[in-house]
Length: 253
Image 1 (cartoon, rainbow, N blue to C red):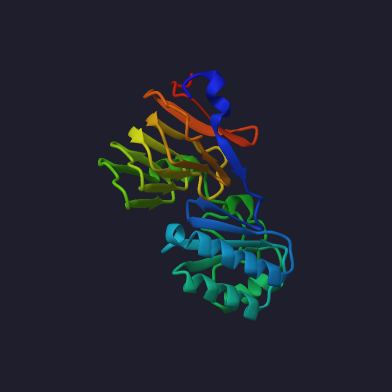
Image 2 (cartoon, one colour; image 1 turned 90 degrees about the horizontal axis):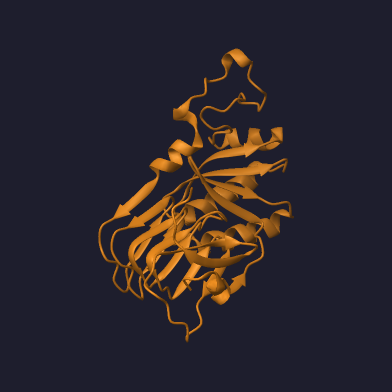
């Protein structure tokens, strides 16, 4: 796997894009709903929350519904669904005034802090807009949202984090690491690792010895063939042309 000829050794299982997308933002997690009938949307949202419940548990959620006109009873149903999964829905981002009015009746916010719109979704005058600066950039918040572990993860151990994860130690078979961002293992990676778990296709997985039972990046899943013998060299895995590949881990210039 250490040479360019070894790129194709991954067996890739692709998944269709869901009607519900989840990604990390400064204010928590943003869920964007696709364009489909309400009943189908609730089924898809329920399935997505069930699948990621352990990873999302305890998070603050922002729901983006676009121009969908939702009644108070429908938003209440969605709010209850989040509560059942131990999630807090606190903001509804909507283009339709009926949806924004229903959200306010339920005590939900309709804009994010620092937004350049008023409560009705109208653009603020330029003099009223908050000044931009390094503290307001998404890069700063993402950079601060990291978890560093100085230990070896043994079989049965699970780590979930919505940002980047750095592990100084090994990830043994039977252990799993799930991150919303990148995963870097300063040691041997022999367990299951999922980077970009909230849909980040640019996420990478790096290890001094990349020998996983399974790798996942965003919605892609890859496993090595049983007969493959891996050399103990630093490697990185990422998505290129719709599939997971691995290459020697080299500093970027």
